Image 1 (tube, one colour):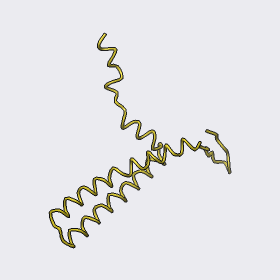
Image 2: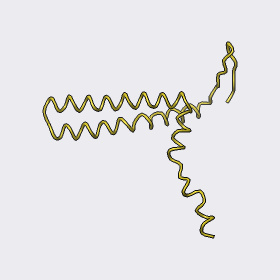
Image 3: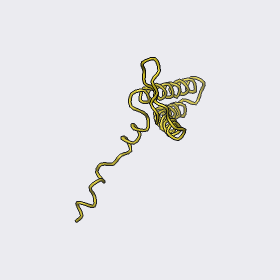
Image 4: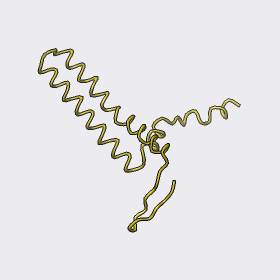
Length: 102
């Protein structure tokens, strides 16, 4: 990564691989609320298989998508999506597993 100064502000130039990793992590974060919205919307549509049920299901899925986009963008700006995903997927319980067996 290179740090560039422009108009008194520092900008970081990322490599292509780092940018693609951030984008993939952004998609993972945005997909979570969207999938929840899809499941809830599907359950509502199955319970009411008419036009009103379909409209409600689409609205719930859209709210999930919008929530996911806003959340992923906020995480990207604050600390980075890759850092967030790695913190969520970390398993500190297994870090000292070999030490306890000995």
